[in-house]
Amino acid sequence: MTKAIRIHQTGGPETMVLEDIEVGQPGPGEVRIRHHAIGLNFIDVYFRTGAYPLPLPASLGMEGAGVVEAVGEGVTHLKAGDRCAYASQPPGAYCEVRVMPAKCVCRLPDAIDFETAAAMMLKGLTAQYLLKKTLPPGGLNPGDFVLFHAAAGGVGLIACQWARALGLQLIGTAGSDAKCALAREHGAAHMINYATEDFAARVKEITGGKGVKVVYDSVGKDTWDKSLDCLAPFGLMASFGASSGAVPPFAPAILGGKGSLYVTRQTLFTHIATRESTQAMADDLFEVVASGKVKIRIDQRYPLAQVQQAHRDLEGRKTTGSTVLLP
Ligand SMILES: NC(=O)c1ccc[n+]([C@@H]2O[C@H](COP(=O)([O-])OP(=O)(O)OC[C@H]3O[C@@H](n4cnc5c(N)ncnc54)[C@H](OP(=O)(O)O)[C@@H]3O)[C@@H](O)[C@H]2O)c1
Image 1 (cartoon, rainbow, N blue to C red):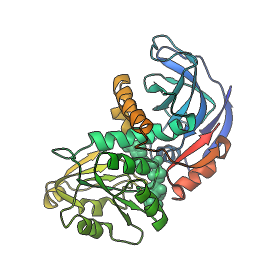
Image 2 (tube, rainbow, N blue to C red):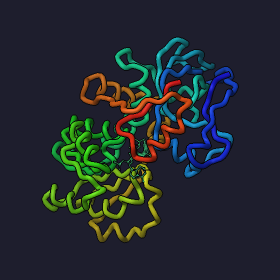
Image 3 (cartoon, rainbow, N blue to C red):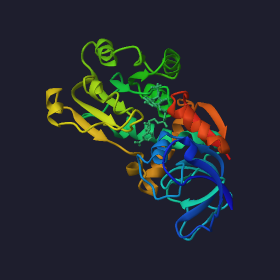
Image 4 (cartoon, rainbow, N blue to C red):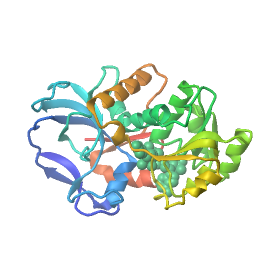
């Protein structure tokens, strides 16, 4: 048996309840992990509210770090006793012990502690595929401007640092002056408080009227329209989240009028569909963290049993950087 957070219906944070559930043996291709730390992510909110449907009752959580207790048939890259971390489907990380597919579970380098790992796998792999694989025609070169919304959040602070390491000029947005200062400390070249400033006008000003090559937009509904106005001709609108709500349907003709723009909606789970791609991306993340170029900032820690409060704070825009839950 293990303690796990589950929902029996979708809705607010109060739908998450702590329960004792059965944990089985790992089957072929599976692994059993005892968590030392669990990552909190905005995607957990989408599952909890039903924006992303799940069969009920459902376990939540997509990111964790701990020790392998047992491996199933055919698993060769892990063994009992290994330190490990993951960002993966299916949901179910909000627990002490779980069985899950092994292909997205990576061995953790000794230099990275469990809390750091739980705080960085989903968010760091996302920053990796955005900045390195979600690119405008011709790619990104040192000195190029990109716009990154919610830059003081979990994914945001990692992206600020990684963009600086790549030589990019990241223009970030955030909802308060304090958050803007934090993102600037972490490598954002320019910050815009989108609660008080017109971010499209400021982007034009900062880029001398040219616009940015890419907008990385996880805010969705509230930022979509103006984000298109921030792009240079042939620029890329990379949508990867909807923390303010889903982007409404739009007419593709708009993209022509605004400079023959490209649009993509990316998800990490396409990028980590295989063991090989997961490991290659994780190695890149481990290296940039071990080098000190990207530091993983954990600004909130909650006991697993207080997950309701953790969700309230995340949705209430009270958090910065990463958040971990401790089993
Ligand atoms: N597609 C993918 O592969 C993928 C992977 C990971 C994460 N994501 C997305 O990336 C985003 C960031 O994830 P995260 O876990 O690191 O969260 P986070 O950035 O730490 O938290 C979300 C932030 O979004 C901003 N925000 C803007 N409007 C909001 C609203 N109406 N309600 C709540 N927050 C709002 C807030 O920052 P301000 O107060 O500064 O506005 C808030 O702190 C989420 O949208 C998530 O779904 C996507």
